[in-house]
Image (cartoon, rainbow, N blue to C red; front, side):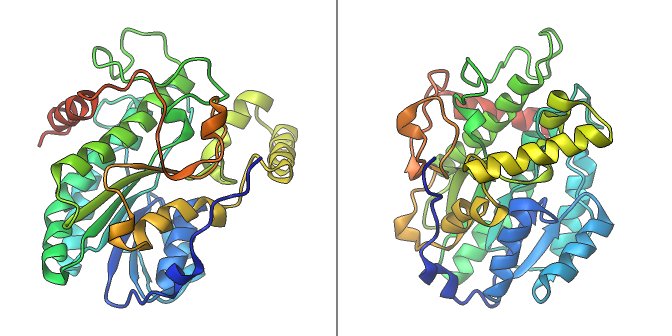
Length: 327
């Protein structure tokens, strides 16, 4: 496998004092390591976590700069609105939003608002979060004379990975899997393609001198995200968990899987690199298990090769998402 892409070390010397960021799913994996690095550089990072206890534990783990304001449950649009209200009562600027949290290949379920679980949590809740916070992102850019940053965590699954024989797609006639037979892998692909399309359209809607919008593939990262994948492979119980952990270690040693620190590199690159070196609306990828050999090494940025994606698709999804979340 290729060597993981890593940020220029000079980026980690930038002073982020007074800057404020929100990172969803910041209590583990890439979200935790992204938050840790931003805090090391002097930023205030609001950890947006579903579980308050884990959020507070992450604050203690990271130390200075990490803040837990209130819970964010992405299966509830009401929770998203409450989180934004609590944040805005405490902070008057927002330099960066990282939509990092996600679920992967889980059994069929509905969110509290009746959405298919993966599409609802991975895309729609994050879409609403970004919508509600965009005015503050733009206002901060105006005040600081520097563009704010928006990063959406997408995936190799947004294109064509070695795990699937078909590229991801967004079925506008059946977004919630009400008429199709449910496939948790394809549903994950739809949600991750939606993250990519969201950031792509945001790059068109907002000027790059006010907001730089990017989507990233972090790599196949050692994190709790793949719990349902390994459950399907090995089942549940003590020995199944043991087999899953051994499999993770095997893939990590083999080089297919990477650490959360390496998984955070693409996000940090998009947040910290000079504005004139980042292309808004583009896809930034760590190396990945792409079916296309040319895509495997990744790239900052790189083209997401998916024949299902049309020029109209990002705008069409944006409009559909606005209607679904009620904005």
